Image (tube, rainbow, N blue to C red):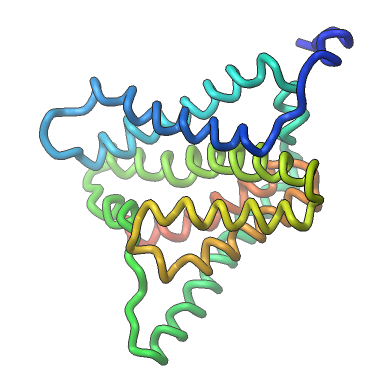
Length: 231
């Protein structure tokens, strides 16, 4: 439904700080899933089939709440796609494979081991169709959409409005990489997430929409999911 022109004029633009607000909603989503989680250790299905959907939903709730005083979010954040954006899946797959091979070669020269991501290790524990479907949906659908809305939708565009697109791509990529330090095992993998963030930011800067970036992110995660579930 279109907003009246006078209503649009009263709305503020989305700002970089709104990305931080959305991260608080993301945390609140995890807390809100608590009543649906068993009292014992969190299971694979609970992690990917309950907590992850709650967190993704919380991002959209946050956008709806903030969007009451912001510019229409679909247009302002570029939340749209074109038929050709499906090619981003192939780009994401190629990027993941290329970076993985490069990191493996570098670590092989220095006798290191590939960093292990806790969420990926948890995904590898999925047994049975229901848990595997939950993993696929969480990592290949929900995570790319929600993370791209926060980092390339809100944060990148907020930074670009103030500092220019080049600084925004770098800044949003650094923030994206730093978020993954919530898993301390990923310290050595920070360059991978930084390169991924730059590729995603460049895609949005070039196309003006999130569709291609979401597809690239989904393809990148898809390789990991296939590796841990089926190989």
